[in-house]
Length: 439
Image (tube, rainbow, N blue to C red; front, side, top):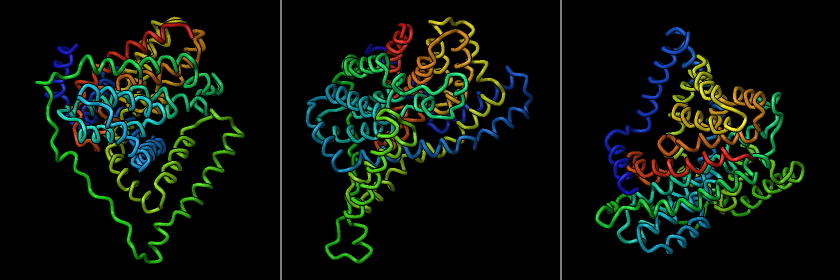
């Protein structure tokens, strides 16, 4: 396994381009494949691409808010104190990576934006406390924990099918989260992945001679502004804990009533964003502290904001030309009632290179996969989770969602993705086997 990871690390270092260029190359690839394999003309493909560029702005805003609210919560003092305490536990490079991937897996299950930021902050804290640590390897472990995000509380597909008015509602109705993210099979598969990934880190950890020392400049942070001793009326409002308490109380009252009326497990993407936004507001204590945290968090969403239109264009090509349907149908045609979720998982993993968005996956695959599921007699909830698993699976070699983490860690995709390729292989086998077992 160490030999395999050395090969992957070398390949990624030499051939993986910047995440933006990766998106551009995928745009060209999707365009050429659609033009060659479908009956659409050059102009038809151009129109599909252009129409898709801005077709997912609403969802893009939700994803940016997931990043921002997760980041602001992770950068609050209570969470930082917890991460500092955790960083005191490991004594060597291997222990640091094992801890990071385990914590990142749990945090990503709670909220993918929260998980990415927690992983980056924990890796930075470990780099300050653990002697002779390979920083890139530990940051890679942090991104490795992200591989369970779509099975968790902020998973786009399970939240989509639980939301009234979703695109396949006439076919499958509303699927509650108790049948998807909170189902026993999903929780078992996710637990096996999260608990076994530290073992993988131990098996592939660099030897002492291979460890690359961290550049101290990467760990520098700007000091927090001190609270002024004499405040102007405006500053008194900015530093007022009463304002935060009142606003926080309003949010808590709303959430208590929402879950009382709709059930404790009745989640949607918007309600998940609401929960993490209000937790961040409360945990930062004062309005100005929250504003500063948001200003810092927005930087992590910059890459998402810039690249989302490109992936929206690719999604437009997939949907507008029928290329996405062709990819899905190629796997559906080989499936039976029992193998259909597995083939859906593989198709979703391939599609994720071109549409690295859970919501985008649902747009491209949702209707046709649910039609096939009903026709074959496969469980729609299991098929929905198969789409989710495929999306999270190949994220390990798709740099788009690593951008918020890498922005904080101050590294590039090529620094970590040799290691995360091994995470993809390891967890991919567990998810694939899990989908072949009857639910």
